[in-house]
Image (cartoon, rainbow, N blue to C red; front, side):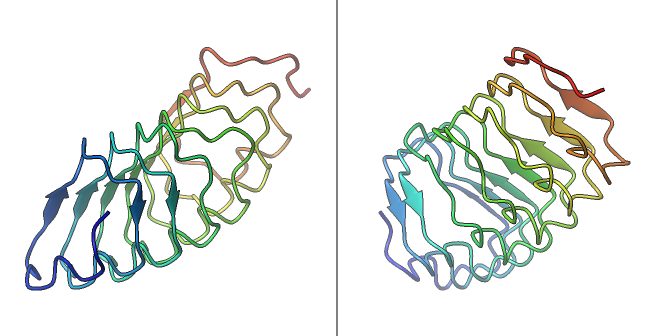
Length: 174
């Protein structure tokens, strides 16, 4: 893990790559002082959980990669609340194996790309994407999705690319 405030003094840092380490946890406040950070890569770690406040202060973050954390199975509904500028979110190949909190993406109004591929999410709430009006790329490949809830894509008028390949559909809505 990393202690809170470890990056104090790097206030002008724009990109931080912490991929392929063995981090299992990241405490709240760990990224304090990184007000200008635009890109954060946490992929390929061993994250088990993330606490509310982990991304506190990263209001200018544009890209967050949390892929390939094979033990990350849940996320708090409020985890992304501070990421109001986020445009790219990669959550592929984690251990999500039930459903995601309905309000998980509620503050991500500028999100343009969302990758959930390689997780096990057979059921998605029809409200999960309702706040993502700027979304252009949505990857739901290989998440074992069994059905598409009516209204799942309501409000996603800008989507240019949607990947639903290698899923487990048994029915499609009329």
